[in-house]
Image 1 (cartoon, rainbow, N blue to C red):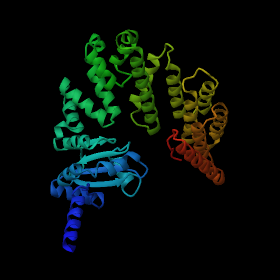
Image 2: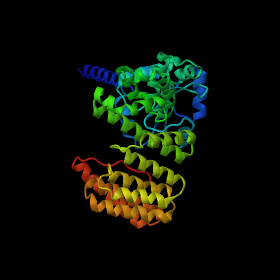
Image 3: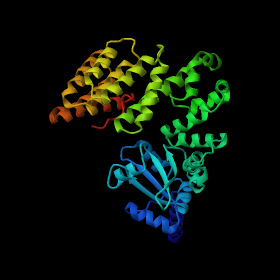
Image 4: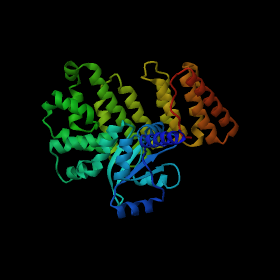
Length: 399
């Protein structure tokens, strides 16, 4: 009987092990990992994560531990993972332009990226996207080479734009989409096929095709409904303003950013439901880049006094955080004054968390340790209350 129990225990253990395989990651510095992968003629699967990334943890717990995922990755790739904020992580993050988490890179032995996946997904989708790394011609990088070598056919371009969209390469997508859509007959842009594609891929306000669609917005609304049409234009203008802001802050792609800024201002000469907000954000970006904080403050004050300003509270709080991030310390009182006004006008839990985080950032930069710690404790208490009440919380901001 004892032998029978031992046998059952062994079988149970083996069964559990067989059903709980997971991706095995190799230890070592990046130079060694590259050399090993090249020697073994394997592509590196590179998990770029951070300790605070919720989707990263979900993928590690729920996807990396699926038998079919583990078997494919362990048998096919040289698996490595790096925290992008520790050790070699920051250097690798800059080298491979990792801007979102989780990011999964597939890198050959020469250090060249052949496939990129961004975001969480199901196990079957993860396997499908990872498999593309074994067929470089179907990846974002292989398709990019074909496109850049002059293959602008519909098949190649649509596949390339789809790959760029999945890889969160919005800037490159905008450039490719501009070439593709500007090459189409204008009248065809109003058709269902191209309008559907434009909503997914055309995010470049300096595109002639985008300008044509915006000029014919009323006709689009009649065909496809005002909600869908206005959402597309507002999202495109909004994401473009964000990209322009990032370009000015990083001092990269400035010519393209200026071109898009000019295009947006030209297109939004007629007041619309979102033009006031978009144009004000553009002004803030320009004034911050020129260190013209008096003009910056005037735009924010005007918005704060305008009851009709779209999402005024978020606009003012975002501007206040930009002051803390970008302006000299002499301007921090602007952020604190705006915080006081918002606190009076919007006395709710979500806003209180935002303002506690904002004040913590100000006090920390001013060297007021006790005040910063008090705001940190207040933020934590409010977040715990929001969690207990199952209410939304604003994202955490870096100091």
